[in-house]
Length: 179
Ligand code: PRP
Image 1 (cartoon, helix red, strand yellow):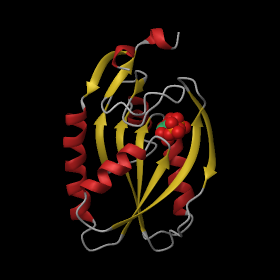
Image 2 (cartoon, protein in one colour):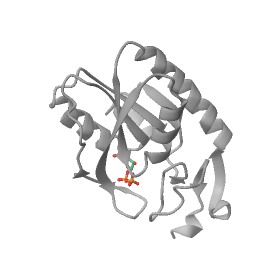
Image 3 (cartoon, protein in one colour):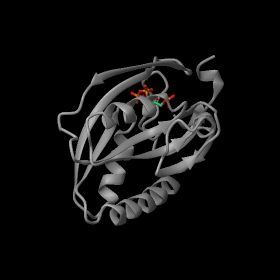
C-alpha cells in the first residue's frame, strides 16, 4: 500500500498522539455526563475505536451509515441515510465521530437531522478536515485531529474504491492509482 502514496501526511504515531489529546479533552468535558458516541460508517471505524479506547470515562456507542461519495475521488453532494442508529438520542449528550470533514455536507445534514430528535447536546469529533469545510463553515468541529490539504487522502479509515482504510497513517494517494 505504501507504494501507492505520493507522500505520508501523518504517521500512525502522530495520529495516535493527537487522538490521546482529543480523548483527554473529551474526558474532561463529559466528566459529569453520559456521552453517546455516534460513529459514521465506514470511515470512522478507526477513529471511533481509538478515541473510545483512549477515553477513561464511560461511554456508549452507536453507528450510522451515511453515503455522500461513490467509489470515485470527488464528493457527489448526495447525502443518504443507509443505516440509522439503534439508540434514541432524546436527552442524550451526543458526540458524532467522523474520519473526515471534506465539503461538510455530510455533517451539516447529520447535525440537523440529529438535532431534530432533541438530544441534550450535540458535538463533533473528526480526524481530519479539508479546506473547503473550513472556508464554508458548514460545521463546527469541537474535537479536530488535523487540518489537511485538499489532496485525495487515504488511510486511517479513508478509502479509495474500498481500499486503503487499513493503512495506519494518512497519506496522499498517488494520482497514478486513479488516473
Ligand atoms: C466520507 C467520510 C465522511 C464524508 C465526508 O464518507 O467518511 O462521512 O465522506 O465528506 P463531506 O464532508 O464532503 O460530506 P463516504 O461517503 O466516503 O463513506 P465511507 O465513510 O464509507 O468511506
